[in-house]
Image (cartoon, rainbow, N blue to C red; front, side):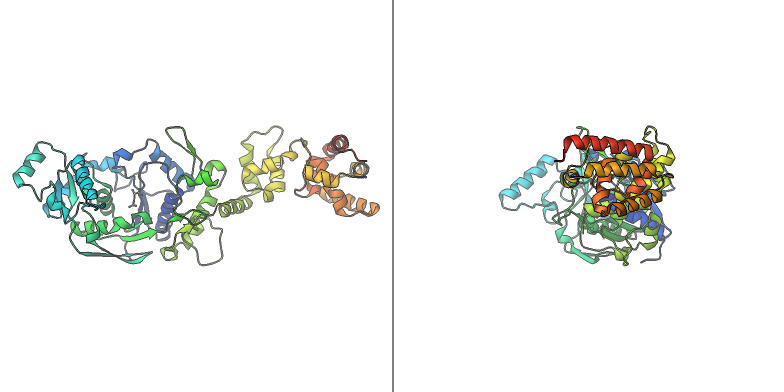
Length: 509
Ligand code: GLU
């Protein structure tokens, strides 16, 4: 790795919500910057006005903020290399494109979209489907290399639309060393004369990206693999301007759970998991779900993302953001596509929930303003249900019986256990329970064990019935804890009610 000051950027285009692959790119940039004492920048690349989606920029910044991926420089934050939104830098790109024309490394092209379509159609008819504007074809087109100089001047003067194209050299090997992929070599005969500057007065992505990376003194370009094919052009642009090229690191693709193809924005809701960090509603009102609204903790989401393409080289899986910073390095990022695993994502969430203190979780739940439930009570509920929950919400749904009497009794358990002496057995146990003085879990347990001994019964003959009457369920946390939490009076009432209901619905012969 080079010794230079680390400055990295995440450069999303506001063409829609940020896919979780984009969040991972932002995360790796952030981790790399923090690890190396560098600077993490956000730059909005909005030069393609045709693809601009209202609200996307706000969405991206908000989503990253939720994830805790906070920039040192960027829109709304500032920094000495701003503005950080390319449309606000519009004026500065043209001179760079013109500099390349002056150096004979780029040229003006006046071909209209219709003319270009006609050439493509013609080529197709001649069984050459992949026509390109390049070193061979450019001499048959309408540009400053083929038109007389005075006509070029005249056209520009009278405001004819034009673009500026890169004059791609013929048969030159472009090489660069990618931090993840090693040496990449591409021959320019495979590259076309890319448009650098458009007729609407805006630079294309390629020009703006390279100019800004240079002006913002970016040391490492860490981005998704889909940009690898653009990298040779970028390397040539750095050469053309006589600028130092940043280091490149192209991150592996995120793949569908079955490994079959790239994880796309449609996959998520189709396969039952979000692919976006937060909810996104399209202009047409279509909702794409997000991790935040599904109840994931940002730390769990980030932890999961960090492992899609990187590993720490140890067996540790749970990392805080700070621990990720310490552990992260580009040389542990793999080349192979990373398969997304929805179950593993839930597992991360579950681990994070378990790590969160009862007090903290109770505080989150207290925002729901549950009737007759103060913070102490919520904390007790959390402590009982936490191990069985994945999301904070689950604590209340799984543990609904801690707040209200069961509305129904689990069918399977009832069918299996509510037989013969069930009713009289429960009547007896209820009496014993009523005699427990200090209603602590320990005392209830001691009374229960005593009862089993006296009746010469196994735990399986009594406990499931007790649970069924109190909670309506076939499984759950310690019944002694639950009973103590509910209190003697409530337990007695529930048992009476349960015996009555089950006696009617499940009469025993
Ligand atoms: N604007 C590009 C994008 O939307 C950035 C690519 C890059 O990082 O160079 O992903």
